[in-house]
Length: 198
Image (cartoon, rainbow, N blue to C red; front, top):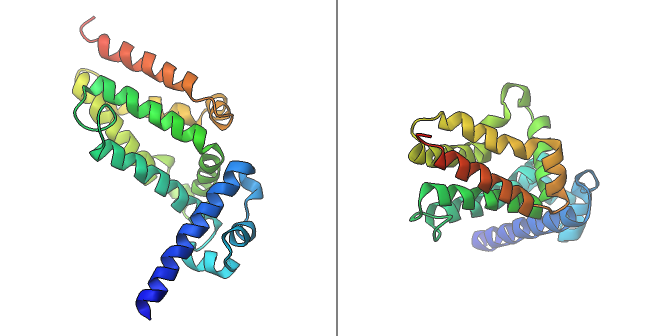
């Protein structure tokens, strides 16, 4: 019986996440309520609250799931995104993937950003404390430090990732225009890596 309940809970979780994802692809974040997600998932509103605690919890978990896929590709996937390529190529591939993630999930990223800002204790926890951001920053910093040990890798990583939160860039991503951002990231990275000793 317990195994059946666990299987049902896992199925409900996936149904809720899929429904939220689908609704966010078609509607602005402010129109994606717990009630709409529950109806689309075929579960009661209470099930969503029981599983995720709140709408904020649901958005955080959905974004975390997207980020886990990228983290796995970075840690274990094929190069250039995964191990085995030069740091310059890995960083270009990583930032292109982040830009693509932003374009594919523009409304989700906006909802996630809002969830981070409005969650309990947000004032004491800056964006940089977000575990997704922390992983992205750590990965970018390591690659920069490996290829350019003479620069402040942590600061440059913050500067690169910080552009994702600038409104002109965020607006482009919401419109699905990530190739321009990926190309600009690539130009910056190649300039950085080739500037050593210049």
